[in-house]
Image (tube, rainbow, N blue to C red):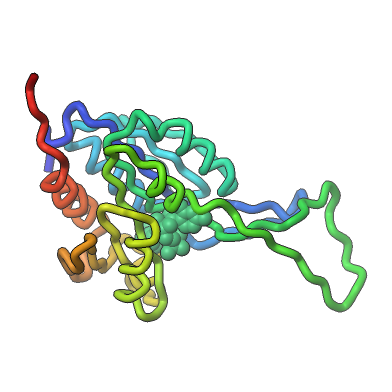
Length: 223
Ligand code: PMT
């Protein structure tokens, strides 16, 4: 599955889960292993692209032959993505991003004192939404992790976040989504469903996502 389809293109992919610190020893995160984003990075590399991988917490190692930038929080990921956005042709947001972070990060370990405690959360920036609002010719691919009404939520995300493609997966399943080597996805564009991919390896889904993006890239005109 090697080709020169994306030769000369710069592709940025986010993968893994973000970490939001509560105190020096505790944090909020999610089950993203990084496998989906890493598979896309590998596929983009094998299609000849220059790949930048912005990775949060992951359970597997990133592929060889791509630039890897490690980040922790959603804000870190936002900064890393935004500072590189202008130079990219394709951006794929496969990371599982925390929508909220603790309003205060305690400097010292929080002690067990009361029977109940509340951690106040504040909203994080939405990286994908910001990219959609700012894009200037870049091809933007978002993901939607849903547990119900997948099609409706996915199409709503595509419109609100101004994505060129949106890859929806049902993360309530054990055999797909978070952590698994496999996934089952539906790919949407602004006109509706483009393709529904049955349970397959993340590796093959990654290639299909990039194939569909490739067909939709603006034609290069020699001057
Ligand atoms: O890493 P794996 O174990 O292989 O699992 C893969 C996966 C299930 C994590 C992946 O396939 C996936 O669905 N990634 C998106 C997870 C997610 O954050 O979904 P969401 O529906 O909450 O967000 C929608 C989109 O907005 C995503 O592209 C997300 O990266 C982006 N987002 C969300 C919140 C935020 N503050 N900023 C964002 O950019």
